[in-house]
Image (cartoon, rainbow, N blue to C red; front, side, top):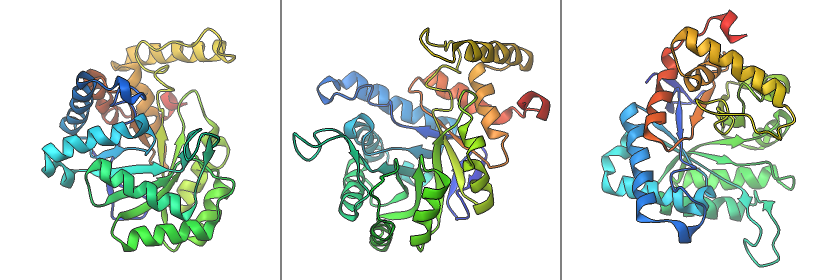
Length: 302
């Protein structure tokens, strides 16, 4: 699989990332069976075999179980660590986290950023994260407090580089203004059914400042992939069904799956978008890896 730099750094990522949100198969720890663990491990190994090197996590995925399963893979095969760029995210706190009356919220406090990073490292069974991201904007964020937490984690050797996720351009600029280290990525939702990042300045900023955009849910939760359908209650139903019809016709003409077409559309953009492939199905992991071999024409892209 081809590679690219993250931002202006020396960190190297494959053009596609593998997203680990689904490898536990559940968000309920009581429902985590040995079969689900084995399936999650199998998904990770399949991604490695297909050439993915960039593995995307978050502290909340599977309520920590996804990082734990990935840690089991690394513990059993330590040599894999040297082939991987491992990323994780922090900042989302569920209702009840910290006390029965605690609401769902976001937390970019110094203490939470550092603590959450340390917990991810333990679950992943590694000493250093290659990339650590703030997951969703915290409106109470203090840029200086974030910068202090980042500096501590970097100085302690716990994180190599930093980024953000779901940040509007002005919020990213605010945080970057306080941080002595560059923010390498902005992970945002972008796909053929959601074009906001093309229109709100997000991708413009990425190109201008040398930030790598990472696309989560590049298949719109599976809707754009093979066999995906538009929900009956989707208010954009007619437009999205027309989109799928166009995609089906083009995929047939180009001799590829709809999944490959959707990912290749993202890879074409000059911002050098890295789509995060989130399926745990080995056959779909393999199919998605074919996307970088499809070079769309300008006409087909539009």
